[in-house]
Image 1 (cartoon, rainbow, N blue to C red):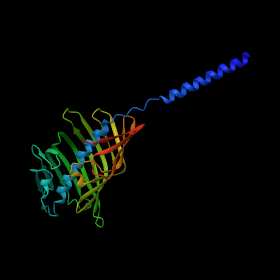
Image 2: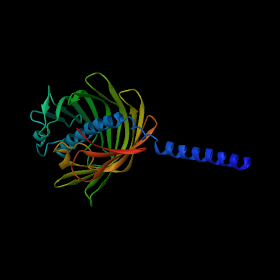
Image 3: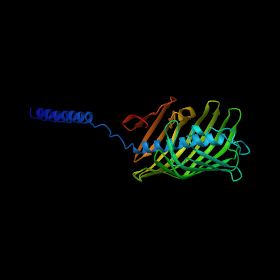
Image 4: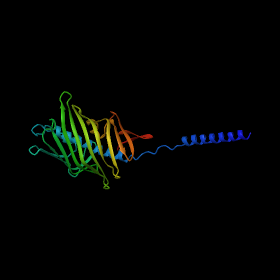
Length: 276
């Protein structure tokens, strides 16, 4: 009888442990949402970059082989912008002055200089962009951005560009800043209704809080001119992986809709946000 009682007590003890373990497992807290500040900062940088590409391509497409302006589309960049093309020195100066506002509400100020060795439609063409007191919506931009025409496909009317940003920096009004370097390939398809850009590549840098980050495009990012002109300065499709503070985040830009909604997936959850 004593032996049976002992066995019963052991069984009851093990059953109790099992029950408590089950309850503890069921009550595990949800994994805390990771720091998404780097995502927001990378989106700010991306919007500045796509805005820059928009008016850079607008200017470059307006120049003939001999440096003559074939058309004058600059008012759609912003009213009052000054574009000076010196084909002898192969330098273009885009001067936004003390500030001008685009039709989509983007405020730019300062200057950008574009140095080129030949018409950018020719393979081997190199276009280098420098910034002089340049700001977008109050954010200061510095660094050196280089585009190299690697190939042109006349059948499909597209250009393959090698694009890099060295010593890139975006500074906020409170003097905090993001640094970034990029190594990308951009396939620009030109059409009657505007361009479409397919982007692959990597980026890395430091956040405003001083932490390193890196990102890789895992599914081509798609940027469309008609979306950019309405103020949608982020890709309309594609996936990007972002590594920051021990987390890997996936940023899903959608399936082609011209909107500012993205889906962020992180270990343990997802979050949909709308880009300002």
